[in-house]
Length: 160
Image 1 (spheres, rainbow, N blue to C red):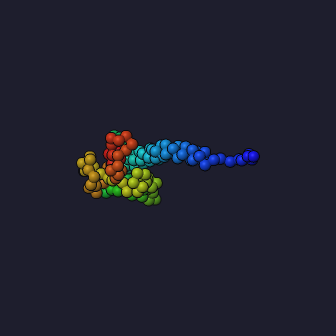
Image 2 (cartoon, one colour):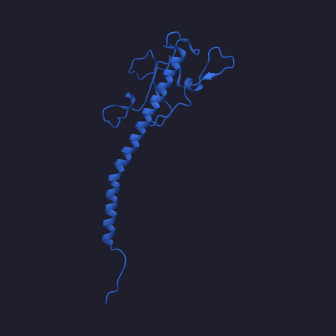
């Protein structure tokens, strides 16, 4: 006589485990894509943040509005562009302010999420548009130092 036994058989256990393995194998590429896409969005935001700060520095140093006067004193040879990214964080003294107040353009240099570094590629206004070597005169533009392809499969992150 057979007694009612509870539980699962070995074959049932193997079937459930194989289904779990297949589902996790399908979910892993989606998760990797999602993480990469999030990093790309963060890279776009950080590049925009730095470029806006560079433009604000240049506008404060050499206003494009007719009749406007410069708000900050800049170093000779920089053409009104910041000398370094750190100058955007440290700020520049306001012209004619006896208290020594500074205009700061960034709170901190943002992280490059692709390279996981605070080092950005820089171009001076005197450099070629596609130059990978910074001339050191000023900072006119920034770019990601990664040579990896973006998710679109057409452009490299360094070309953004």
